[in-house]
Image 1 (spheres, rainbow, N blue to C red):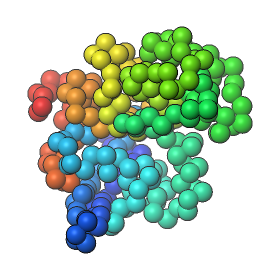
Image 2: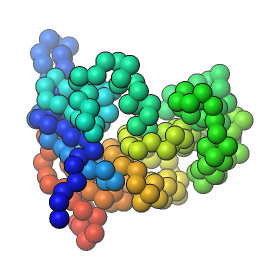
Image 3: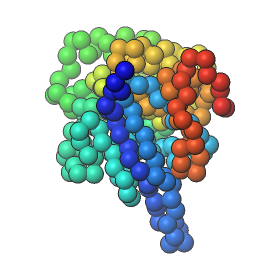
Length: 240
């Protein structure tokens, strides 16, 4: 069977930062990673292993010190800020560890903001699917609340809804269930399973073995390097 061309391709990605002492610290060291369309990939590894930095490079939020990242045919390093913003707006949905909501907007308006920025309006279908997703994640009655009235877990679920409002082809998620209790985590993972089954590509950073086991494939980082081959969900043994 012919292997699909990667949707996201990272080639020898290295990322270095200046330390407080003036030395260069290598956070990513020659990462090669292909993500095919429709994959559901979990990036695992100990704290400080480079997972979040890799996620930032894969999504164009950060640029590698060397190496390349392509999304489809686009070399992210060759794009200007406007072109990168266009890709992030039309192709990617983001769930971050810290959910930055706008305090001057109520919850429903925070969630719908990406749809307004993309097309200038919110369609009836988008509004209906958003309300349904909010209900599924247990925040259906919070649409009129201000962000400061929410708990950390509620804010995280609002952030997940916001990331999915435009049904992006690729979802980039950094510890998306870190602030959630187990029942809410399962609700979020059920949604991710359904979105992946419908064709959405998902890349998630996680420390949680429950989250990692729900992915179709896993890659493990230690000290900025990949240390294993992809592990597939069916019949695999947990490495946590």
